[in-house]
Length: 264
Ligand code: CV1
Image (spheres, rainbow, N blue to C red):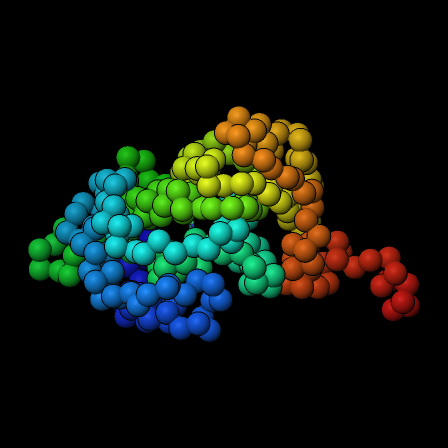
């Protein structure tokens, strides 16, 4: 078992919720009208409080989703699968797209851990220990949370959407069992989404397994076509490559022959 609920999760949640309402936190992510952060915390907390931490129903966060104002601007949605190691650095550097973690749906609890306690004398959350999310037969809170929030951002997306996939994964860049495949893509409305831009990332130091038009990427391209949504696909996206190199400047894949000659 892993450690328990992140200490001070309530204070962190409220602080981040208030922070997101200032223009400066994340451009474009600021809600149009003031949000009642205390109410959002109560709804988030009550979704699981005092329940069996291994029996959280997939719809537990329904009221939380309903309480968060719908707010993503058109053409700004960034979806990802297998690329959590670079997607946020990219959106921060390029400053034009928003992931779930940049919106009021995902920002408050990004990187935190939480689970319920059935102890009636507790606050309803367990700060000592939480079940592991991969535990057999255990339906944890984070699965319900990402099921609900992923479905919501899929439904809410309008205009051009982007999805960043890892072309060096041996189990496929587009996987049927991913949150992207199960809850985001299927909830996109072809009446609202005008185009899907697939960008493939080559994780530094890993061999390329898939390219646009091959393997699981071809599967996703066909799914877009069947849904009636136009798509584009970019191999080894150059902007993401530069962001990867800015994080790891001396990686052999980032040093060009010209640089090597120049330094000798
Ligand atoms: N999403 Br910490 C899904 N899972 C998340 C998210 C998140 N925002 N944040 C975290 N996780 P994987 P995917 C955890 O790389 O296609 C949303 C989950 O608990 O396999 O399944 C995002 O909007 C899970 O264990 O990709 C994104 O577009 C693991 O990370 C899409 O769903 C899943 O990461 C990514 O989910």
